[in-house]
Image (cartoon, rainbow, N blue to C red; front, side):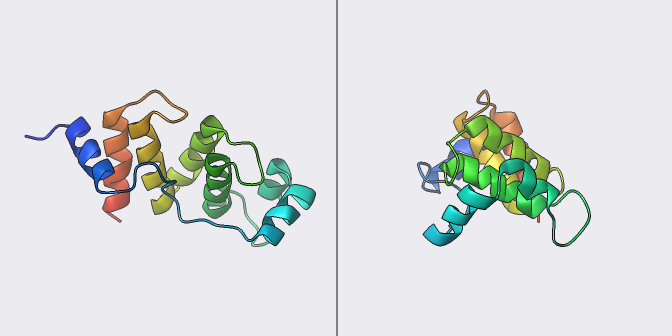
Length: 124
């Protein structure tokens, strides 16, 4: 029987483990506008669609902190924002979070938690 660590290691070996797992890229113009006009707090409080918890914005912030795109790279903040989005069933955030737990980026390495998030994202 394969344990959580072996499952996660197999998943990592099938991906490019040194790359950011999320598919997010900003044009230089958009990244510059974010730096000038939109801070972390105002990005979350201004939701053009109304309502509160916006998992897309939370996942976007996680990706920005993961990559250091328009902000200083900070894996702990990336985990924070990915967790908020993942708890709202955002599949990409769940996958990113699982990979970060598997690699020990911003958190203590934990293969069981990694397997939980990766399994949740795979089941969607």
